[in-house]
Image 1: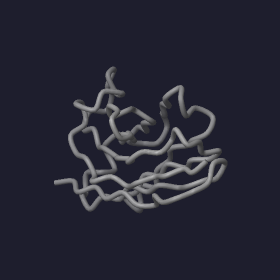
Image 2: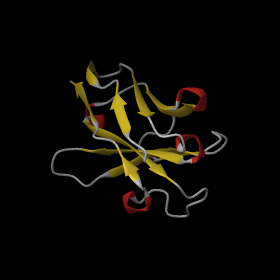
Image 3: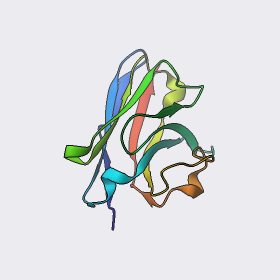
Image 4: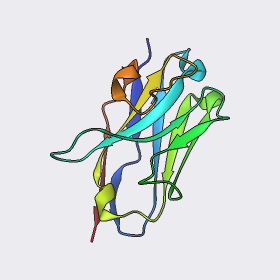
Length: 126
């Protein structure tokens, strides 16, 4: 089974940067597509980014496009989310999730993902 753990969250001022990490202990993690989602208080879970198993294909939500980069290092069983030019509206709990399907037309829908981490808090002040 895949067990995902997020890290790298914290408190940052507007305009700052953070790099989130999603690490897995499962040996099939390298063959899964991975997505990042976020959920702010009182709001629905929102798609942020997705990367294919090989790292060759990425997708981004319009709200973060140009400010975030998703990448992965399969040798380390880790997926990253680099976030720059952070805004107060980026404040949320960020989750990573693994999808066993190689191609998903509904990649932005949380229910298509098979495994989820516990989340890491990102707070952007001012």
